[in-house]
Image (cartoon, rainbow, N blue to C red):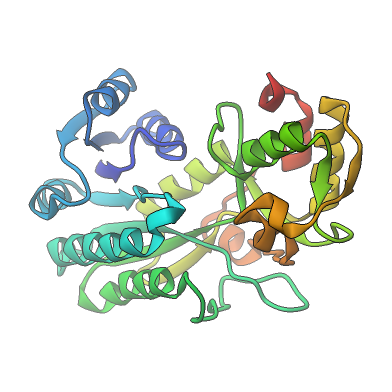
Length: 293
């Protein structure tokens, strides 16, 4: 089948495109710039020029292909609310274009935090806070199942890691440690994050496009719970820095995230689609050294 991928030249999209091509599918990748177009073409995919504001272009891409994987999102936290509103318009447009076709619409979201235990695919995220509108967008995507769209939501964990990760949370933590001269954590660092290697995540997006049931929620989680203090210990070892508690404010927006215990399970996803992560876990990948080059 031919799959329309938004964010095809981004961190996750750059892994999803070859995963789809390697499985025998063809890819139409959205590109908003010459550089993105060149990256997508070099990977062996076709290029559709446009951006997330070009709703007519997005509808064209969706209608002319067999499935849609929507990954593009503006992660500039200084305009987060505007990015969420734009994303909602995109999902609405894609869903409308696919209505009644039975074709797949796969979108990315995040794993929720559930007090006292690992979140499962059945858990619904809390609706408060700045991310509430994005949660509503994920629910709207799933709701298109009632209108003849084979929709699914792939929830990504805090860390989607791998060689080439330049803008995720791990590079930011490393940069902060270098600036401050300490590999820090908030409090005792016992808060836990789920994680997945980007190549394992890409395979789940491919499986979702191929076979996820309409309205399904999937967890792209390989490591269920990695303690923040263990992440800090690896960073400290590679940078030859001490590991110590650091006030949350010194991490900027990451400070709040470093305090939240957010383990997540993917047991139901593995059972449903036969997905099995095979790439290195977060600590092993971080210890490999490519993040510190």
